[in-house]
Image (cartoon, rainbow, N blue to C red; front, side):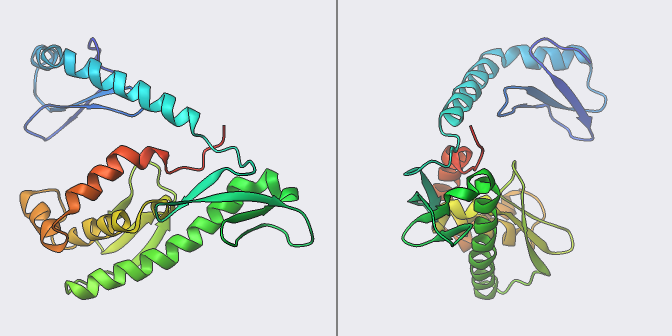
Length: 229
């Protein structure tokens, strides 16, 4: 279905129409199966101003991200649990990437810098997320099957129907309280596998100030990346 202002229409058994402007600026409309093209068009046109504003925001965000892409240069900083640590390039017999009051990379390994950093962050994510998930699960009497570290780019965490919790390794770039929010969010899905009012009430019970951390992630999450220039 071709509609002005819209890149894609996705129909499902939902009851209402919703519009999503993706980070790349594409406009997605989710609509009920039998809703007519005319009604969808009318809804989209009524939201034209909102769509234009969101597309402008997406373009601005893309420009900001482009200016902050990683170059793995001497002195460039990389976040660990919300704190920035500088990178130092070194020579000598020790190879790879290691951490000593900041990141140290053997200059001979510069071509592999992105892979080495991801490996380091993955190991840190495994350690931190295992500890924090275990803590909150025990605190609130929840049981999950297993925990996995993913390379997801569009979501911070997920909870499968079988109780497997997945978290992207990029999450440990964020402050610990933001990490904890994502952990609590996914643990709450063990009781409510949706985003209903009951689900958010459960999140609030487990973390009363969760909105502060959710908002931080919405605002800053796009900068938690190792993308190269």
